[in-house]
Image (cartoon, rainbow over all chains, first blue to last red; front, side, top):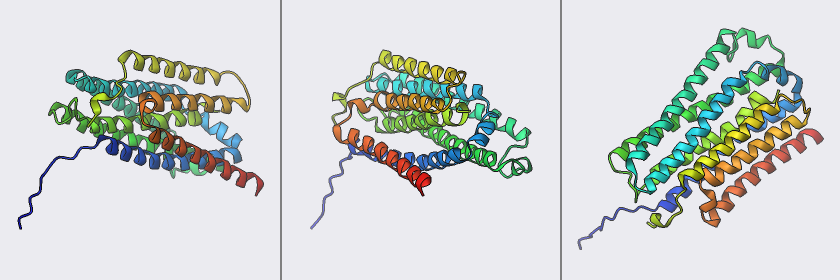
Length: 204
Length: 94
């Protein structure tokens, strides 16, 4: 008995999106755990956290917030443009998003290298001689912003693959799940930064 | 599937959302100039939470998603809030 398999391409956008959301939940708890550690140590060493947070450049932090907020809008617009079938505009908006992400990373590079010049980097002698609370602050600062920057880089890769697929018309106005999910991931990167920014840069 | 029936965000509404988010960021930055004491943290967290809510509902399109997904997202945030509360209760009253 010959078994005929009818090969229909199965695309279920609702399930695919739900899967992405469940993944985002795990991401929220990954960062949530770090936020919790930060909060406890902040409560314990509030004076030292206050001093250490003063070392951070609030201007760079604010600029990066603007980059991420604008890029979040452009990627949301890219999805809307794809849904309307405007492929050219989608490609343009995706490119703008990737450029803004690159600017964020560039900014982070300058910020970190400036800290490194002052000998403030994980495991540095300067850091080891600091009071315990300040050491913890910078440890958490590098851990949280580093993990976040890694997410920005992953987001850039995802958005780049999405751009290539839109160009190849594999993502189109009827099938755009990958664009939708990449956009969701990008918004998550924005969400985490929205909490990181005031907690690290502003509350001094 | 039925993607064509879905709500599509308009460019202008997305631009309005961005403007609101930028205004909230400005308030958040300017508020550090005033010495509000312990309220500085509260204000910063309230503004951040408002921004997160706006991003979730507007940019991430939750406002137009089905009830199941909206409840799931709400549930996750409630769960996280509980984790925070229980940890702090444990920390302060141990």
